[in-house]
Image (tube, rainbow, N blue to C red; front, side, top):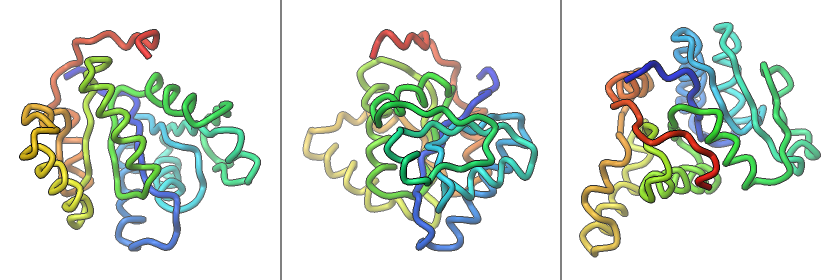
Length: 194
């Protein structure tokens, strides 16, 4: 695959999480920066979002935050990023994150992470893009989600081939191995499809 130049990372924004996950987010940012991969994320300064950005910035990487006005007003934006893009709403945020990224990764997170991950998976399922998507199942965090998807497949709601829309990895380093092994996208990144 051609080198991914920008990786969109979906992850949690709470500090009240397993410290191992915060370290993994920081490591993801650092490893991306060391590979010359820009981080695109939700723009927050707390939780895994903040750790991700801090890890990339400490390694002199480029970090782009995309945050809606409502969250800027709550002063949750990371002030040290390379570029902060303020958009009018959450829908625009997700579209801009898509447009700026060549691949996607979901680290542990909550409802927002699930929302973003499933939207990008649905867009891929519909043939709107074929950019790589990696689910980082650190310490088995996404095991129950994967079990649910297997149940949905058994019930006929998810086709077996749709489980191939994403790769599951169990370590931070494997995120980048999966990106390197992914085939080159064949669908143009035409934002007019959305």
